[in-house]
Image (cartoon, rainbow, N blue to C red; front, top):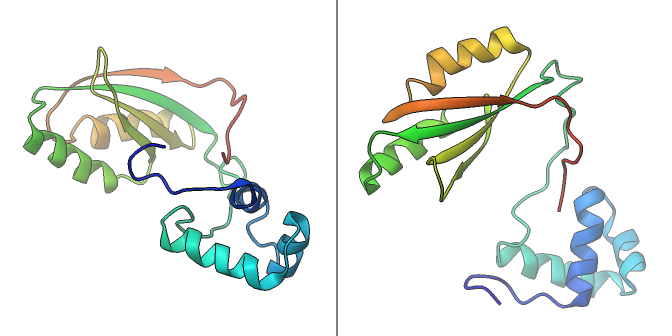
Length: 154
């Protein structure tokens, strides 16, 4: 088990698998699916929430239906990788709504961003006005996604 990882048994994993697809499932139906009664499932849900395994419940939105069909992955190289610079970059990324994901990378660049916009023109504006102006950005490289083969819950 990794540090910080919760102990999950087969039933916990079954509950999580159902919730990942059907987050609004009634507890009674969830209990029936995993072979328990309502009370033990409720107790497990509370434990999983308290342990931080379940961090919330939300609607899964279709970005294409929302007019956000353009996806670009952006490699970012920083001019400074000391801790203060990394923290400044991390804080600034949180304020850019078009950045859907941000991952620090061990490799030939420092961060990989997933940026979602309406189209290439909107992406160019986000790149020029938001991404390139983030703290300590020295260079970026963009890769435009042509199709999402797999996205979604665990």
